[in-house]
Length: 73
Image (cartoon, rainbow, N blue to C red):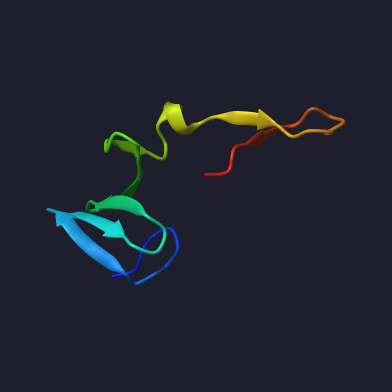
């Protein structure tokens, strides 16, 4: 099994259908038709990548068009 984020092979099993990548430090679950990727918060909770709490947007300094650019994870 490879990590869906970095394609690394340093994967550990955390629970039933739940895995952790030691290379990019994300946790992910596998279901029959999709993979859900999580970041680990400082308090140990899991935050899904598609969670609105991670959808921070920033304005890039000096951008003349004020184009909204998603924050880098």
